[in-house]
Length: 136
View 1 (tube, rainbow, N blue to C red):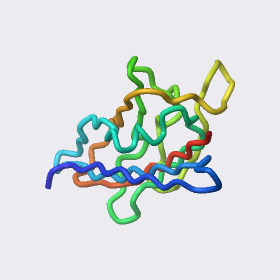
View 2: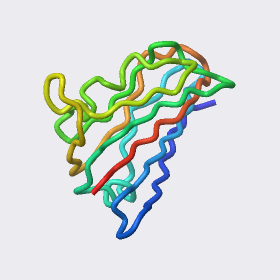
View 3: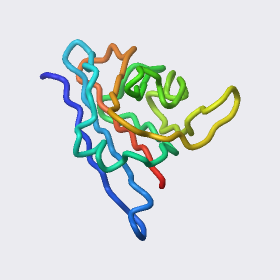
């Protein structure tokens, strides 16, 4: 089975001031997932929004390797969560905010293309979900 990454965006609230992006992923039979660019149908809808809360949810059926890593890279190859999505649990959902300065967490402006990158998984066909809440 080849790796898959799907993106679903849901606008909520009055005047679409909240958008929830759900990224569902499944690893290849060797445990890898290729870096995947966000589709323009997603980036066009979140351009000018702020990335806020991110929640990682490992599969209960086929969980990834414990301490797997996720990065969301901007057009300058900068992780917009500044490594706050690294070393994730393979059994428990975890949440974080972007790190915008040393020891300071908060919303981070998003503009331009983004890339989903998942590494340090060795489990064949492991899967999980990343939810990112964007606010305006």
